Image (cartoon, rainbow, N blue to C red; front, top):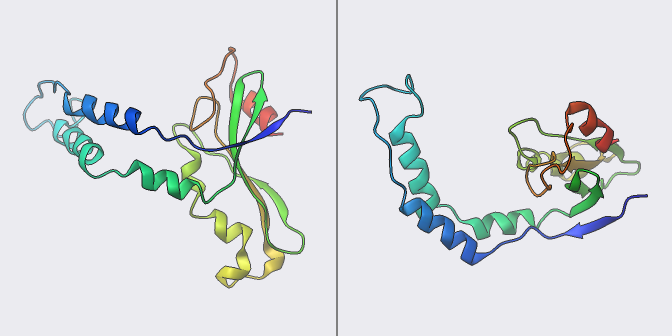
Length: 161
């Protein structure tokens, strides 16, 4: 049997400051005037996105939000795989694996997890609760990138099984 270990999403203030510093030092490319995404990424959109990361994004708040969910990792040949496991609060919760696609993230599932695991709190019969497992694909989120070749949709399905 594979060992499952509790996991705490990491936060490094120094790494965050390093990222902000690097974004501030971006050397912007030239752009064809009025290309409107027709000739690649819209430069103004990219600058606004970087400005958001530099000035407005609160990484610590995101870590605090993530800490509301139980995180785990398990060792596979592909590396350590991250997942959330939130137990349902009904009389007989049904196991449910919810997986993201490429290039997605387990973050896409955070809003729906409380509805599935604690339906009574949201006006739905408690008998319709689920034990929700939300894994991160190898190389995504807090999962290690694959250490071997051949990690395709079929291998990921085997891992989730």
